Structure formats: C-alpha cells, structure tokens
Image 1: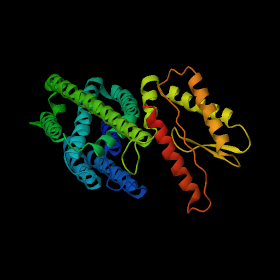
Image 2: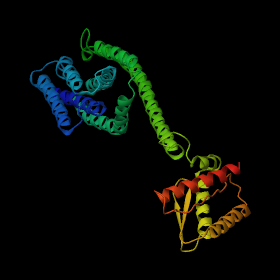
Image 3: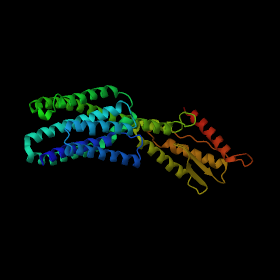
Length: 353
C-alpha cells in the first residue's frame, strides 16, 4: 500500500507538470485534432511511468527520466510552434518547479509514514489543483508573450537549463536524495533559492505582458486617432482635426456638445420643410434646399452668422459656410455644386484667420 501511495504522489505531480505545459506551450497546429494527439501523448507518458515504477519496480528517478522527462521533451518539441529558446525555457521552468514539488512531497511522505502519506496525497492534489486554477489566466497571457516577443529569451533559457540540471544532479547523484535524507535541508535551501529566482522571472514576465498589452492599446489608440484626424488617402489632416483642439483642451464631451449645439442651431435656422440637414463629415454639415432663391439663402446664412456671433461661445470654434446652386446642364451637377460650395466655405474660413 505504501509503495502505491508513493507512486500516486509521483503521478499527481507528473500530471500537474503535463497539464501546466499543455497550457503554456504554443502549438504549431492548434486544432482539435492536434490537441487530442497531445492529450493522448500525455496519457501514454503517465501510464508508462506507472507501469515502470509500480509493475516493474524501476527507481522513480530512472523512470522519471526515461518515461517522463525525455519523452515529454521530444513530444512537446515536435508539437511546439517555437523550437528555440522560448520552448526550452518553458520546459525547464515547468520541470524544475515540479521537481521541487516532487522532492518536497517525497521528503514529507518519509517523515509522515504511511498514514501521513495518504493525507499528503489529498493535500498535494488540492494544492496543485489550486495552483493550476489560479495560474490559468496567466498561462494564456504567457502564450501571447511567446508569440509576440521573440527576443530576450536566450539568457533566461541558459539560466533555467543550468538550474534544471543542478536540481537533477543534486537529487540523483551520487544516490537518490530519498536515500540521503541528511542532505534534505541543503536541498531545501537550494530549492528556495531556485524558487526565489523563478519568482523574479514570473514577476518580470507579468510586467513584460502588461507592457506589451499597454503598447498594443497605445497602437490601437494611435490608429483611432489617425482614423479620426488623418485622411486615409493622402495622409493629410482632415476636417475633424479642427475638433482635436476642443477634444484635447476640454475633453471629448466638449467636442460632442459643440456638434450637438451646431445641429440644434442649424435645425432652428433651416426649419422649413424644403430644407434637409445632413452630417457629411466629422464637423461638416450640408443643407439641401429645394425651390429657394439666392436672396433667401443669403438671409438664412446672415441669420446663422448673427446667431453664432450673439452666442457667448467660450470654446475655440467658429462656423463657416458656402453655397451653390445645382446646374442641371452640368455633368455630375450635384457633385459640382458641392465642390463650388466647398470652395466658398474654405474662402470664408480663411478670411476669418
């Protein structure tokens, strides 16, 4: 019974190791088919270790190397999208942490005896499951980091490889650590140093992820800014760029209020049924008038100017207007009328500067 509990404790840690790695690896083909292959491979590794240790009585250190570490390294390397420092850093990091858990579990199991080992098995399962559930959001963010940051991994990979082999060497040479319990305190101190180093790595990775996410957000905001204020065809500032002064000084709500106030004013001036108001740009409006004379239009524009000047506007904005009549004899008559009205509006605008 005692031997079976020890094997179950080892299997619990191996399953945790494989589960974490399946969440941290970026697969070359991430479809359901390859995910199924990955999980089947993990099941084969777990069963092989169980048969080797419980049926054939292999030493756990040998069985772990032959049926867990080496096969999982090759298996995940084949499935991994990145076969560089990112993969080896991730593999050594996960294996190093689980190796420390394995030693702690074995050491506590020896001190606790058979009854204590049974309790330890359930406690260990609960602890590892809790760690896995807490870490799930970070696993996805770590995969994103692997995908979008392709530099700076080599030095950390070298350190993680050295740490990994140091842990394996101390645990297995010249005899397995479980046979040299007097050195357990030394191994525990070394493990604490390793975990503290990895805590720095985890903190650095989290900060790097946050910096990356902030840079993505800044890029999106820059893109939105360009869409709002830069003409996509020419790259020049568009007419909404004038609204940027208001938005920057007084906030976007102020800019929205200016636009709403402009619409209210235009609707008040052009309230008859033969006038149709449209917003055709960021801060640009058009009024289509039917069956009106030039004198009537001039009266409307004069009234608009008086209304604008009489309002005590504290915001840095002004209103410019132009008009033109549609000549049915022209090609693209409506478009040509817009062009003429546009030019008049610009002349009006520049005359105010």
